[in-house]
Image 1 (cartoon, one colour):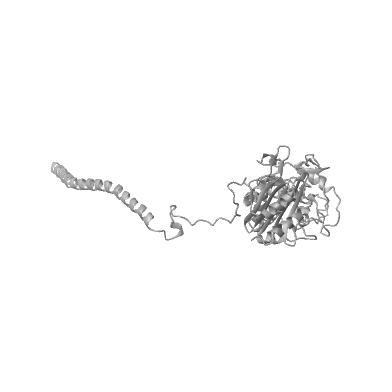
Image 2: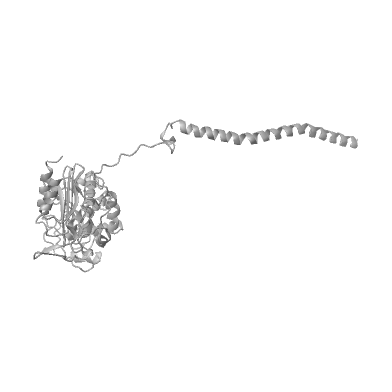
Length: 403
């Protein structure tokens, strides 16, 4: 009996194996077919997907292919600078050109009206001894015009919440004499009463400069009168460095110069690394002499910037258009107090202007209140022209007949 059961069990196992063989064969065939079909399917569907992407537009912004053409941004309108290179002089106004020549103007002039460059050219010599002429890219130290760059940076910090122009000076420099009476607004508008500090040719640290300024006695109670003083802007520059943790040069270069597209503007002794620096002169006893400059550290925040007329124009245009500070900030920026001086520039009847003088340089920057006229006169002869203000006004008159 045991042998019979064993035999039956073996027969049953053999029958099961015989029944499984066709199934295994079918499974194996199907497996081979599937293995060959799947890659083919992937290739076909990938090809179809690629064709679909090329032929069917995306339905939503999220589905746009990277290869889809994007709408071009409208470039910001720049003035007509009809030159092959920036080095080439521009003269689209013989009347203005003749007027500047009649004055023996020595420097570079830029005049723009309605986004068209009327004049952008050099006059006289950048270096009289070496007979190097001034050209459209000659750089000049601009003296007190530097202040408008600092005031712009201060307004940026106010917008960032890092300071407020109505704050007391003592909030930022606790031990500064009379700091509990003087506001940043007083510094910006030259109504602090702080006198000028003597600017020598000795290098000085920023800390020592502020201590030196603090030793001066107030000329009047803050906010009651007006007195132009470089010291005000040196203090503002010092506060800027404290509130940003950056040097004045680093912050202004990144957030003002670069933002406005300036390429030949900088601080201090970097001037001499520019391709076309001008040498400063002064007419003395009928002869041209080169006066010595104060050490640039003495001009911290108030007179240590250089530029070209074209860069100055780009800054003016960027400031006026709201590219550097907001419209609300601009209203405060252009509003004078106790004088026609606002935040780093003068609010004149028909224009905004600033004027800068250093030993050997005399510069004026002006733009009309409607933003259509820009006049920049940078001279490397300190007293070569009696009044750049008068020259500026005459150029405005000559522009009246030009569309």
